[in-house]
Length: 178
Image (cartoon, rainbow, N blue to C red):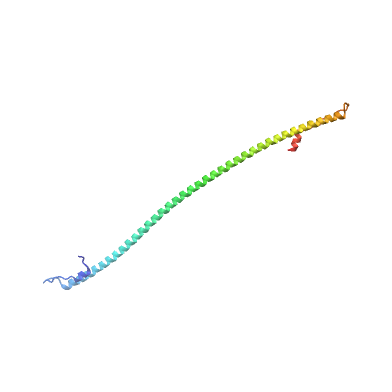
């Protein structure tokens, strides 16, 4: 059984012939009772403070755990966001490279088409020039023949010098057309 301040106060001793002085014993027990009561009150107060401290400690540990979990999640999210941004930037770079390659290829094709068109146009020009020369040459011969015939018809067998031949420079005519 635990001794309490009240049990000390109520404690009674058997009487003997030559025992302790009753007043001194009661006085001592009274002081002892007060000291034990103070110690018990202090102990109760300290237990209460300890419970509150333990409660606060538990709360702080819970908060610390939550903070650690939050920090860990934030770090994971940050790492994921960084990886995602890195992947996205790599995709954008690849897309830009593909588009640039497509633009370059399209430009090459257009340049080839333009070169091909220029070559065709030059060939057509050369063909047209050749045809024009042929037409002009034919027309010049026809003209010469008509002039000769006209000269023979007008001046038959006379000793008059025939009209000079008409000199036609076909290249000069073609150059003027261009």
